[in-house]
Image 1 (cartoon, one colour):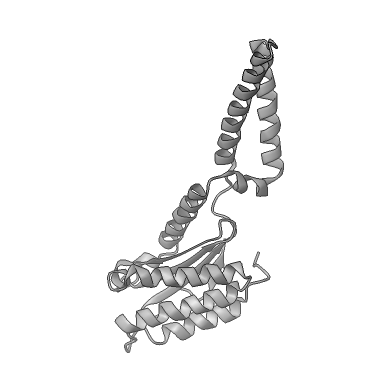
Image 2: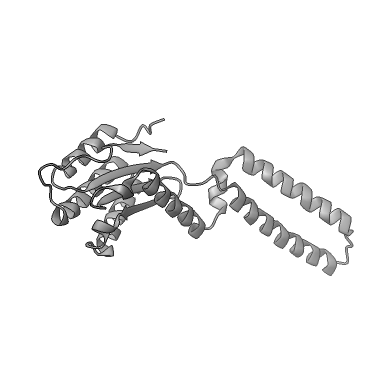
Length: 209
């Protein structure tokens, strides 16, 4: 199902226009989320419950209250089962329990997966570029094949990603994609200008997953 806030036609037109000046290829992917985060969030909950349990036992011991080991273990099991039920019922809650570095790692893994799955890495001159956004993680990345990546400083890719993230944060994702496509197209054209006989090797549209 396509996201209503995304203008696919404008993005497709931007890709076609950018590729008129270069033999390179641009591919765009938008992910709603890069993971279900069930197991990472469950692990965080389990650790938190163990810490809380230890604190509760320490307080009770300090006040000379005795808690039987069986009672404590059963309480932990029931509490953890209830927490898992909440995580299963409210999937949007999970990502908020996961550290940012884990979220970014999952999004990066998804970007590389899409780069390979969409065959961006098998263009003739190794000049394919993937523009990737994962909404839930608020993450964006430009993955460039070896042909173009070797010729462009990392700072250029970082600038494009930063502008795309800013546009997404202000709910201008279509404009952000179009700007990123134009910037990537300009870099490709500078190093791999269009030549007669060039063929279009990748689809010119945004894929939503």
